[in-house]
Image (cartoon, rainbow, N blue to C red; front, side):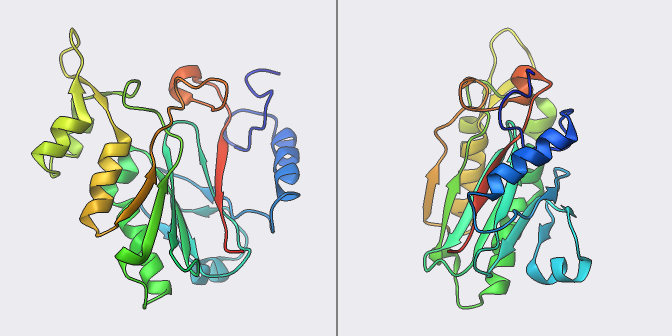
Length: 226
């Protein structure tokens, strides 16, 4: 039944849990292993193989995860926030992050890259490629002054390009998550950054959107080492 009449993978979205688990079983049939599901809290903590080994069964409370273990599937659930995938160009260490504005501001991208470098010390930021997955786009993401101020430490050029005042709505802006993420990644020395052309809010045929529908499912963005 709408709004859960497609492949909702989020257990905390209000859907029947058994339906979600069935959807997850269907997904698992097409990939190397059951995904590592996180309890995402809009923070900046990163789950690592060592931490997961010590904690046992998930879901693990974190907003990013990394691995260097083949066929370990990393998963990020979203419905407007940005999923960001990372890989070394050799494909021997990968990461995935849940990057809404709070996570971006809190350093979730920086922490993910640091965790990847710790797993593979010979890798440098220049060796990492990044893909920015489907998120609410810059023509739809309305925010207040609090979000603008949260990013006040970024360059004036970035702020002016990433936050456009909404005419007739004082203190309201259209925010560009992709531009904010790109700026953070640039500052870390990442040279290959792709994606950033989607809008979950306006593309109703393909994506869940919390801002658009309020009650909605979650889709997963996945990455693994073959």
